Length: 116
Image: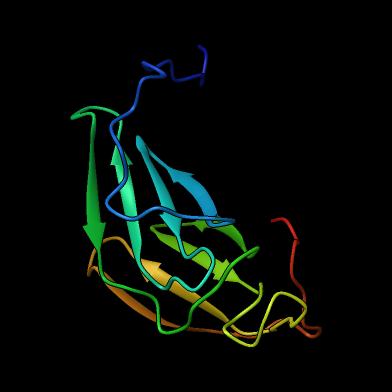
């Protein structure tokens, strides 16, 4: 059985233009969060072929990392409004069941441009 999902590459536009956001897949949804001076987030539903806005993160983040963990999306590190050369260690998680963001343990070192 293949775990590869195929979908039309001609996706509709996101609700917010983004530069250097974080992204992670969970099930049949692709979550995209943050970007340059952005704290907003949304997901693409492969089945409905639509982007759906979700609650914003607590912090603006660009060049951050994101990963799915259980029924959550964890977004960590990146650069906040301090500028392109600033790095942050904080992290937050989006619970896909409750639709809420909450704090997640910070990384030991501030990082931007990292991967998860």
